[in-house]
Image (cartoon, rainbow, N blue to C red):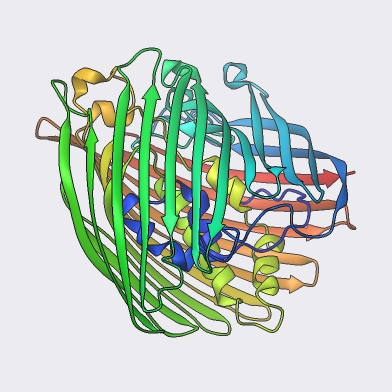
Length: 533
């Protein structure tokens, strides 16, 4: 968080784009596609084809990051076993992006080498990578999405962080993913649209957790739900298969038919019926009819409240969201109960909420929110990709997640303040007999995380900034009636400045402490330089 890196200029991201990047949208939230732009005109999903806009040549921008860090506990050991050491970080890399009338893509990659003065057994070299692109194969009807990521991830949220100069290698794994997704879109009539998509995602990690796992998804969405007049409908279907080298395959399928009735332009009612099945049980699978209802209320351009509740095989599922934004402030709240197989760690969810708060706080400003996004990035805070690069913990299991998150932000000419509070409760659904022990959801029946993060930014000069962060969290893991707990505190203060257009430097102090299953205290001081050429 405190490390300042040089980054190429980027466009600000909207709230719906941020939400889409976190992971797959819960099935019950499909009725909310209208609000995310899935059925906007001839190009369903998102803001349309990514290649739209003026063409520009592909360019390659070399980058280099260097940093020197002193830590009084580089192994994150218990009290009385502290080992202090210096570490040098050298991170060469490059970034490239380009756009044509038929394609768009961006890619960043770097090799992060950490060398310690005394504790050479902690020396490590990691690959960091984030890339995404879209190719128009045929008249913006047949398209192909591709993505690739590589990052250090946690094995369990009850353990030490995966990154930083001080870390515990027993709770870190290198996770690499590659994804290809061809899809076909069509439109008929004035309001009806459709999309059929196939996605293949290959995941691999060290420590034998996700060796060569392959996830395949087939999905269908068709209807006119974005513009009910006053009635609308759409049909969805999903089928997912995950294959593992060292565990049994998992399968899920569902289909739903949604109906929408617009009482007026500001208030819509929704209902759905459907069917789902899976093979989560060791003997046989689970099947269940689906039915539910919900609403969307938009009393003003600044305020939106939407939600839906469904009857599912695990009981009642729901997805409720409230957002409000002012000229320089914003507030959002989300409450979800649904099935998922990937999730964000607590800290990353909080950072994501903070970034949304900043972006939304400036969305009604004269420059359309660009100043808020620039404030976020210029003050040394990470890009969305960097937040999400450390957002997942490695698991083979499907689980029932109950999540509540509240975020708010204030942005002024020189000061910014943002707060995010998060609670998650994850309960394993897959029979442990189908899993190989080792990951978090295989070791615990229930994992509960809660915490909050507060960030304050102050612009010292047009090129210098001061950032302070306070965070606290608690993680509980429960199995066979026994509970394992970890409590954490985190505080940091950093200053950053620009040395011309190509170099950013920062100096930071950080304190972190943990008690319970993972116990340690650490103080660290770091100086970093980020350069682009």
